[in-house]
Image (tube, rainbow, N blue to C red; front, side, top):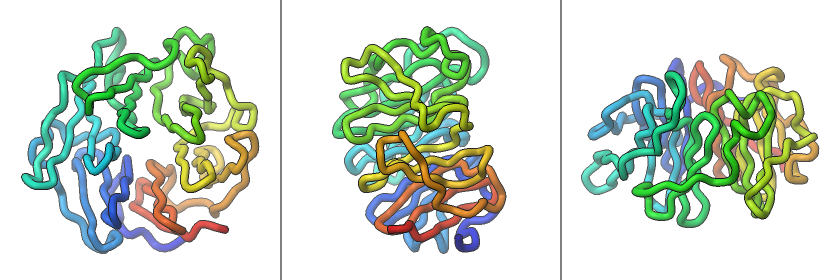
Length: 254
């Protein structure tokens, strides 16, 4: 693991597009680097809140999720952000219940997760529909009260990370199943790259890889400096890890 390429900036999310790095940072908005992390520029024009909870790409469009269910799209020509739609549906709950803690995509579909719910949009975020059953009705304490912090579509299945577990939605979209291979391990972040799943476990402070859809996991990193990891991203044979102490990178094992 190399020394951090961006120090003392809590990197909530990392996105890589055509060799350009984007990170969502607490109270700093979105930063961009076009030289593999050597220098960074803030791109916050149009954002009404600099507490960026999530970033994702839909085609060549960059989206950011912030507090209170608001989602923004970045315009590469004007270098500004604009809010898409009216936000996610309002849900009952306390502070943070509607914060967009994650955004991810599959094909032309945009997915978002808040406490207890997963939503999808087929029109770039203008309208939203609930995906699968309500997580609060699952009967698992982890799912009922913890925000959906990780959502991943991999090999035809939808995976959700919440609390101390990873869950997979069945093909019919009616049942969430807790994966035995990740049971009782505090879930930090999950990511797919090529044919493998990658997972950061907070209790272990390491990154693990699964080549069988999450049934078994193998440690691939040493313990991180400045834990916990706040985000993961990969490009070719390199994995990027955002922590409270900055962004690190390492070469992935074959």
